[in-house]
Length: 530
Image 1 (cartoon, rainbow, N blue to C red):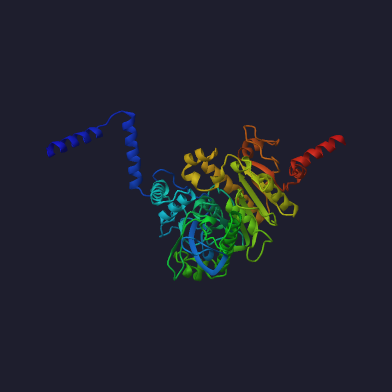
Image 2: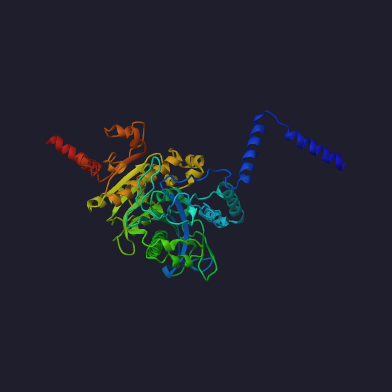
């Protein structure tokens, strides 16, 4: 009886394996072969794409630094579940992306795009979706592992900083570097809400490959999906996202939603200040001390970074909630604590509190297409108009500033997510631009802006005048400029709303196009009547 059962099972198995020219059989074989190849080659993601290599003149290194700070309590609020202070700064964690010599390999493994332990990140995303429990946390954890668990960041871990300030000439160089005799310019980058420092690795790494040192901060203000706080002499502590509802309701912890966001921004600003302090210490020759203090055991070459960082050429950058923070850090600046002389602001937040108008440094504000297209009331005014007024105010103070829209993009386009899941993100966010082209456009314009801070020379898009005082829905003839370049290049990807337009031959056009639309109409009417 048993032998007959085994014989029938074997016959059914052989029958199932017998080749058939049916679409079901071919599809099943294709799926099995694909999954098997992904499992055999662990570096290959199962249902997503690898992050592409960086394209600048330099190779890119990466170092995770977590450095203890003097304990700072930004607010006395405490968490309900643990009773621990919610806004006490103990350590600052950031990844440094930096130029390294071509061909330099590391003995250490590449950083994973989703940091471990993966379960903390999964629980964090479940909390954001308000569905966190044992079952959903496990399902999300397994899904993340299948989708992106094996994806690695292309940067080489803990390799030496590039030694020369003169870039080797390769066939058909892509760009001139921004490096100067003072060293490599600095950028501090702040991630958005429900994001982390590892979700902008392509943007940060591409800038590093062009000669920039980028410090991407992991914020511990409750806005990230999950993080492990590592402090020497203390037990590692998991930090999950939290809101004002997760705080104790007592005299010290009673925060409403708006006040809670401001406390988060203040905590983030404290992390930026500590990041600048660490970078300054490294530049002063204290790299070995920083390495010895780092529980993540990276940074063994930092002692050779003395005098290699241009702390006098620092830029603050951020996306979404991080963009709101970037504007906040510029208030009354630059200062010794926050020495930023320029800023790159990507999709400043629509629900993260008021935007700081007191900006007195050169600033580039980029909206994704979805951010400009979607009408949003922001403290009683259209968000687009608020941002436009900020940029115009910077120009009125004598500093150069731009407000532009990246066409075809959506809010996540500057992150790594569309590169990893291009079809899924395009379908869910409405992005129409190729994912790689979207990041490339952000990097190109940012790179031109940073070069301008060093050389004073305007190039590419930044040398153009205002094309669209107001946002216009893109179409095949998306241009108001009688210039063939716009029909072929710029108009496909950009609209310029505010710009200094320093080109002599275009100064009059810039003054006209930079005017508010109502003022422009009044001026035209006066000219007609005159």
